[in-house]
Length: 303
Image 1 (tube, one colour):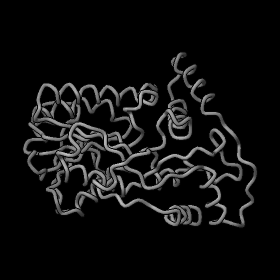
Image 2 (tube, one colour; image 1 turned 90 degrees about the vertical axis):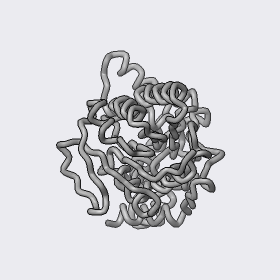
Image 3 (cartoon, one colour; image 1 turned 180 degrees about the horizontal axis):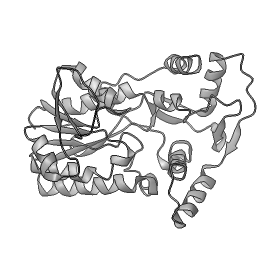
Image 4 (cartoon, rainbow, N blue to C red; image 1 turned 135 degrees about the vertical axis):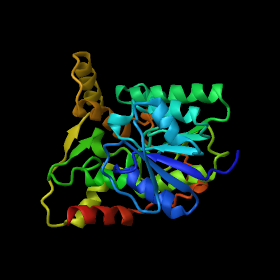
């Protein structure tokens, strides 16, 4: 496969898109184009080409993708279903590689992939596989990073350090893999730098393996004056059951869908929340240490 030079990014102004864009720029390996909606007011470095497209129109997006070797989608949750347009347009524009907005759990894991929260992403994967089978010059790569490390700590998702009694899921003992946003950006650079080795497959990256128990101990070191109490224990099995019941009643909300993420990350090993094997070496993802985690928490907790 020929080297990838021209890369289009969709969703480049988001919480994940921004660090991915920064990594692509800083690598110095690619000619980067940002494709955005006409209504977007986001600004980018002058060195970056910015083009607009109606992301609901295959024709409009195809025109925006012309001449691109690869497309990286970092759209948020609301934009995941619209990726079907991006995939169709990428095929029409003869794009060589498409990276969908996954950057989370291992959706090749049958237990995780069957959860309702991943329904739209699984549909995009079906479309990608069918497109690659029909047109061998079109390929895809899914970056699996499991939990966001720094973002997850900042937003109290991995540990609610704002509370004196944080929630512990399934006892807080489960070791799970987590990856920082900058490392995810490096993983994208790595994929595009090694197109043959990453063709039509899932790649796995992680910065660290950690548990909620360990995170709490680090948080206690960061803020020793805080009066911590016994954590509130929550069952991920009960969360999944409750969300299933809510969906059966037509009740769809962020908390309902979030419960499934807790099940994957903090739940039983069969959901794949711990990555035993990763592609860090190939993608040049260095990883993080406990000291790095402490630095993240110090930044968020003491700011």
